[in-house]
Length: 365
Ligand SMILES: Nc1ncnc2c1ncn2[C@@H]1O[C@H](COP(=O)(O)OP(=O)(O)OP(=O)(O)O)[C@@H](O)[C@H]1O
Image (cartoon, rainbow, N blue to C red; front, top):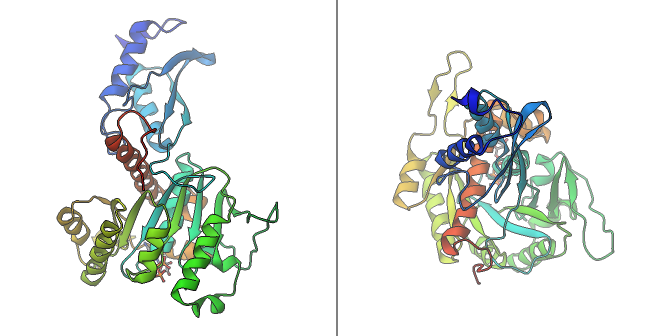
């Protein structure tokens, strides 16, 4: 039936309807209500070489999933189907910061669980999915973003003598106190001084129109974290934990802290969740199993993903690169990309559930 519908030189309305129905029927974590929700009317044309091109404007980045969808549609209609996508990310929360649409805080209750590494890899994953992204190192006492981006010793400049230009790290706009002061100087700063310095970094950087700013929060749930969460107009937070009881207990404190400052938590990421044997593929749960899911269920949030304890993640981090830069379609990159897509989609759905059909009614502070 499809070969008949799709064989002509121009696309019939039946053919278009078939594709629209498939897009509407499609369901996934990224598209719980179909790809055309809400009320997206795609332009579908036949282009040179007889490819079917579906033009869409979408509110969050999702390149790799659309790639899979186009492959499935191609099989279904026995003709090449491609997407031409324009992403139109909307701000979820009203704020005064120029050049940034949404701020996402990456936090952890406990130190050393892989928060900064995950923040960097998620930032690159969002870029791979089609967004423009910046990263701000709020870990003022131990800024590790310069090392993770291979930018130790780099110094930001200023085009107008007023705002700092973020450092471009392979397409990621990066700013860290580590670019401006010596690590040893930063560690002796006291709370108010540190949060003032952070506020300055956030406000006096020329963010140049990014869809998402990833803020790598300092580990813990003390005064400094509380102040930063209040100071920064965060659209949503993500909590990183390992499956160990001690890390989970601190992750719960993190969830409570965000609740206190009324920042919605999009979910938990379980890092170092399991180790996969290189020979037989067996997963061993070195730090326990199922803890992230239990906490997510109990505190009514989502387990966004489980990342392995992986020597490549550690090696890339030490060398200042990201698996997303070496091969953005590798298995581990796909895992980061899936989490990044879910975060972006959830952020949008959060906006939508509070103010249906329009971004005009932004959440007021
Ligand atoms: N999934 C992983 N697999 C293997 N190693 C990892 C993984 N995630 C992080 N690491 C390694 O664990 C160490 C700690 O990571 P990272 O600095 O990102 O943690 P953190 O939670 O940000 O720490 P801090 O609390 O000091 O800010 C690093 O050596 C990093 O390379």
